[in-house]
Length: 265
Image (cartoon, rainbow, N blue to C red; front, side, top):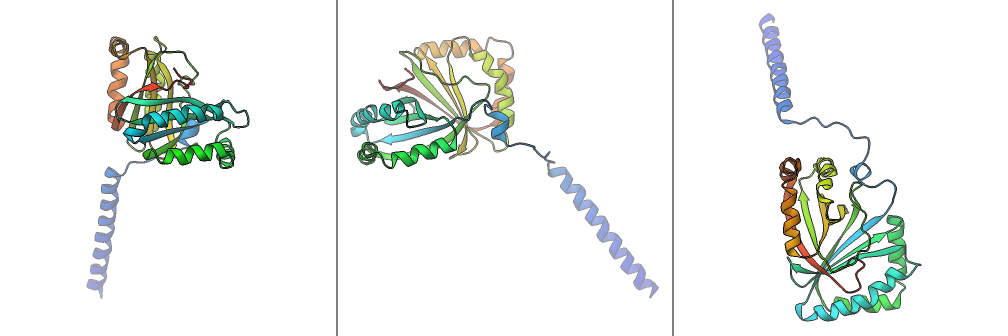
């Protein structure tokens, strides 16, 4: 009986030791996560506004791009100017370098999701818009959109005169790194304000997640090159780039030309 008791005790002790060992091993590989008291969107977005942004990418049949631009320039400004629609057309472009035969539109909804819902409901009753959408569908190869919030430390996009070219730099971040990105760029943006080239900075809420978009304006491609090179001569810029690069999974640059009716020229 005693030997049986010793065997049972040894078995229990061995099991307990293995359990402690497993727990210790897991502690090496499992990162402790501090509980957050607020969502990323509330920590990074502007609190004084409740604006929501929609970014649209339309890939157009090459033979239809001119006709597509024409109907967009006829219809989109009417929605922008109509006071019954709580939305603003921030900018509308064609991609020059990057994905070809592509249109990019950026809208702002003053009042957030309720404003977006109100605009969508009203557009469903707008005969001109329904005709426009039907004609547009015959011209498109594909389309996608994202709903975005604006980083608190970036400029708010406002109309500007031209001529300018625009660069949309899009970053796919590693999940879980948005706060780090925001902390670094809250300091980095001051290195890029000298030439008034910073237009807006956004992060996705719906659509492809952990996406960041930085929108820049330049007089031409050479000016872009000069301004970007000048940043490397400013103390602190190199360090911030060094720390943000590991946060990125993928990145893309589009050079865009505004349509004639775009508020950003």
